[in-house]
Amino acid sequence: MEFGLDPGQVELQQTVERFFADRFPLDGVADREGVPVNRGTWADLAAMGLFGLLTAEDAGGSGLGVLEAALAFEQVGSYLVPGPLLWTVLAAPLVDGAASGDRIVGGIEAGSIDDGSAAVEHAPDLDVLLVVEDDRVIAHRTTDLAPPEPLAPLDPLTPVGRFVGLGGGEVVGGADAAAELRRRGAVLAAAVLVGVASRALETARAYALERHQFDVPIGSFQAIKHLLADMYVATSLAQSSTYAAAAVLDDPRADDPGRSAASAKLLAADAAINGAGTAVQVLGGMGFTWAMLPHYLLKRAWVLEQSFGSADDHALRLGSILVPSP
Image (cartoon, rainbow, N blue to C red; front, side):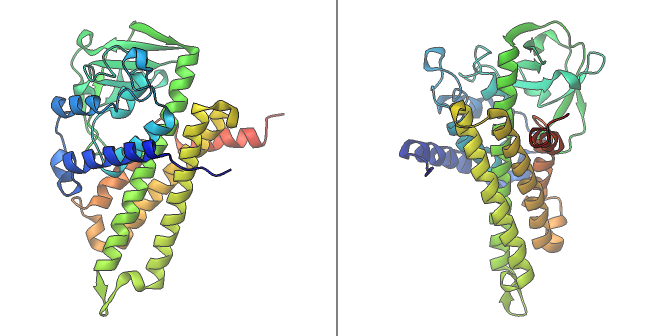
């Protein structure tokens, strides 16, 4: 079977890429550290239809699907776009005002709550916090909670705060909604990781062509060629797996949605972490400095690897499918 993007999907991907290239240029990535979400830019993203990609038209969304969302979120990763875009898109079918951009939504797994408190990404910017349990999804209005305590983030573009007093809240979805949110979250997180891996490959490739040693580009050295080739193969495999998993979520008759999502997240995390680490290596001493792009890519990959199930979690799940317990 031949799989390809239709003209509308290609146009969507290009439109999102142009927007991010204009609003989030990579040469200014350091300027985004510690900066709150820009509500004006957030409203522009909503007007473009980004937050309503998974929401039906009669509910204020675009009525598209997970594949279209994956195409958009690949660009989110490529341009290191800050803010809880992923959780807001996932929440839009459940939380009024998310698709329109009126509410910024974040989320956590219920298992991350310890004695009523939890570390939450982008906590100061949130209007609503979702808590995903096995049998339901709960929404907390952040105005009902104490202001979050700032915490030191791993990724400088992903601020973290601790909310306390988590309990109660409004049930906005049942077990099916929780399971669907997790599957969609894994696939879209994989798409962001694919974007990170693609940007790491492009950064390493460009540097390998520009940097000269012994009067030739370092990209002509066999060792660098092998590194770039491995990055390309891993990124292409992760991208194909992510697109396929997104298509399966849109039409579950094609394959098992849970298995497809786990495969995509596992491959994308591997491609992004190893690819960003390789980009650091290709750039040499420059790559290890804080202000260089591979440094940001690697930290974003580390954070995303833990979102919606770690690579180890998904590897164990796939292993249990291949070798069922007796």
